[in-house]
Length: 486
Image (cartoon, rainbow, N blue to C red):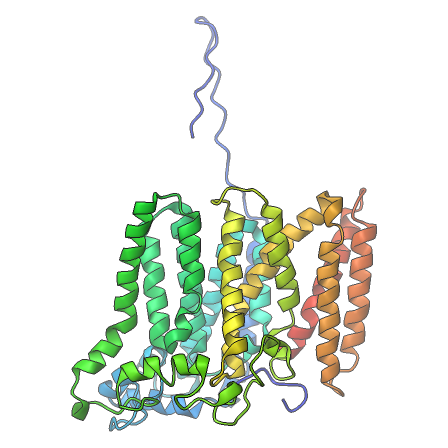
């Protein structure tokens, strides 16, 4: 099981012309785009450096998943094994997933030689790229402050740190899905077809990384384009049909290629009951993960292992998954609901509402599926929740802050969000009895001080004191996951 180390073993304007004898008045200067504040790029670089350290520190001493390591090694010995994702150079049996992530790591090992660093270099690179893409996407909607918060939250999510130090396919999976969501948002905002097709290609490659897990966010992407696109309904239908073709091709090329090879000339597809890729897709590693059966243990047991506890809507908060992913789930939920309410009657093309629909849908879909899955459910699957939580904390949090400062009706919402987050952090840390027992009281004090300061210094000429209070609340909210990540 891969999880963060548990503390307890586990338009141009026409110029106005004067009279005929007067010189023309110069046209007003076109508005300049907002310049990035001086701190924005250094902050992003610092977050990327921090993430690089977390993801690569003593990497050669980390335990890799030997199941995938064997397949990657086999791929360095045989191109046939590399294509099929075989566990051995003789191509007797494959892993129980499509091989796209193994292909990426296998190419690295083909070039640089087989080893931990050669295997993990692509994983670390795409993990950092995911942070950069998320930062860029949030920045264009909510600004640099929100983008910085979102990037930091993603970088410090404990289960994300853990899985980015492991050769499981989830790091590449999340990168492809975030890339697909970012391209879909751009396609909707700019009314361009090419980014939409690019989005479909990314989600197709995600499917070839981890099958149906790569499609979980697709309904949110579909809803975004259908709801917010400025195109006519006919054009929307045509564009979505073209995207569906790209999605199908990029998703099923490997399964089709495998099917075209006679069974006697290909390895047995691991996890299937008949040696075919289609059975794997629909069975053990597909619908079986959601509904159980097909070799999956009931209740998320994975054959009795009890990897993530019993299925149910509270699963993300249990003693197994709570410390891995749930620290900022309460804040992100409040930020999503508050953000949607604050959008009010804004047009459907409003960028903030569009982003909330996309990333709120991303988070809700992953949450419900992971919480209720009856089949195998490993803790590291929940890393796919992290990008949605990060965007909602950054973007939604900024919306709550603006409302807190300008509207008395909203004065309690942001403090309440920080309060709930602080209380939940204390609950999680007290579960880890005997581990850094000073941390939860410090979080409690910082949370109370931050909330009281925010309310006291909200009005008047006290911007610095308000900023200090807000910083205290943010530090308190991030202290728990930072400690787990470290």
